Image 1: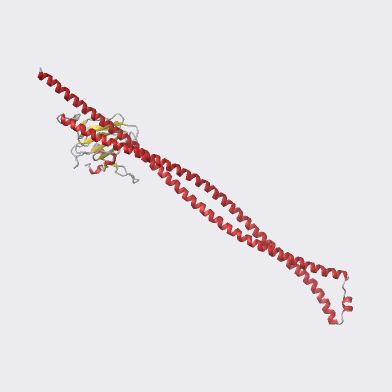
Image 2: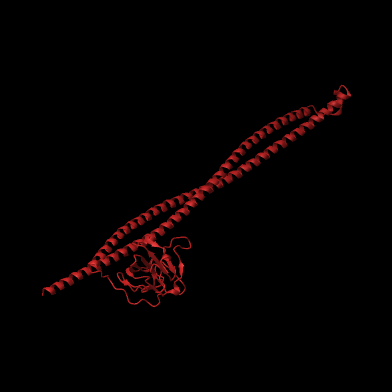
Length: 405
């Protein structure tokens, strides 16, 4: 009777320990799911931050261009001010010359008119007047000649002065016309410069807002990163508890590996790291490497040959499923396996409803775990494949080519 009680008691203890192991495994899976969700948010935030920084840089470049244009306009306005100032001096000089010419013309005209009045008051001058008033023939000729020359000189002088006055007047008008054109040009440039200044202020306001957005996004990234650090610690602690529980249970694992691997997996082509290709050999062509063509870091390789949609996805080595999850964004349907050699692999964008394993399952090398699809953030059917070193975090991604056949 005592033996039976001891056996029952032993079974209860083992059951409790197994249940504890299962609960801890579930807890670890939930932590990894939470961490994965956080990492996706971090990735999305980083993309958003990159967009904000790019927009901010572009806007700042626009501001710099506006500054350059405003500076050019100001330089032109300063040059116009200098030319207008010079024209004002020339106009003042022309006005002075015009006044002097007018004064000289008026004075000479007055003298000529006075002489003409005197001659008119003396009556018509005739040859007889010159003969009677002259002492000699020479004096007669000289007097008549001088009178004629004086009248002609008065006329020529007045004509010349008038031409000079008109020339000065014309020059002054041309100067004033040039000044008016320069003033119009200056007004236009000042208006354009003012508009650019308003646009510059708007861009500065936009940059200030983008800077605030940048700070907010960075704060979000920092907060999520700190949360993931805490989760990493909790995962390590949970794994340690699971290992201790398994040791107490005699080394038993949470689940058994599935049966024989799919015949489509090439189990004969194994790398030095012990990995096979995660897709059938006919589709084991890498279409995107560790870096995108743009130079951005990919952190994975893609298998995207034509016709790959719906093809089986294989576990590259024996291991335990850590995460098997279906998302509508980011990785889409994805699986993370922790392998016995300490490496982690991630398989993403699987077909909807095609996942055949769950968290805690043991899988064998070559076992089908889902099918190739295009779920989540994907532009076409392909398998996104990552290799991570311990402890399997996002920042532990390495080049999968170094581990594949």
